[in-house]
Length: 359
Image (cartoon, rainbow, N blue to C red):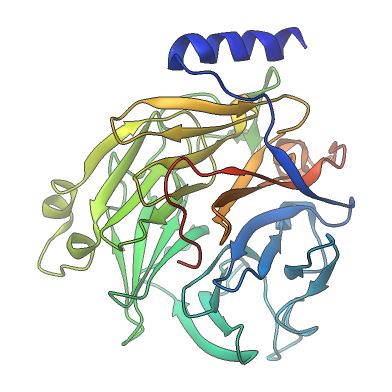
């Protein structure tokens, strides 16, 4: 409690604005359903990846209004594929666009090509599959999150990679071509800052967890892509037209990137129509926002209620929804031991600006 009060006091001093300790708890999940990322379609349907760091059987589920879940898109697709059959190997990022297509970033699997699977939630049929192989990907690629730009026919993927080679991957929805951009740039690789949560430095694979680009999102007008390394003190943005301009080499593209504002170590992100970029500030057990003036503000903070906030989705009701999953206590980030308490939930809070779902 002392740490919580200190964090709140510090945040108030830094931001100059009061905030509630915890957002509204919208739904809670049992221990076997650790949430990953969240996607809310234009019709209000809610979909969720089940976080693979806990080794779940299901990869993606639809979340019903009462908190129950069902495998999605189908019983077969929601699980690991058998031989060449339907299925998903490991989904972290997923987004629902305004046309009702659920895009699932099926990026994990040793020696297997990453891909983006699009499922039509209106007709309940497979829409498309886009493969992300070399040279757009690397042997050390870790396809983490994605943003969908139907206006320009593109998907933007954050490839965390091994840290030194972190990059953005852009897929052309018309041709399927994938390009690797800003690899190893100052905008995509991690800063040299320890990831400390509840007094413990987090490790990954036996090494200090200093993680490259992860949060990535596109604004409702499809003008700007906002992105950042997970371990970084800044949020960046670049115009979609610049990412799609194949005449720009990496040096010319890097010159187009803007430092949007301050942030802390963070996982997921989303942006409203007024340019408020929300982040899940998991090292602070908090949810914050990078504002259009470049300042960072803590919106909610609670050691008990917000252990590792992860992914966001904008709702059709003007709320921002976020998943909570205690990821620092998962076996992958806790020396092979599952120390989670089962604080698995979806929380929500009113958007500061205009929220537009399905993008």
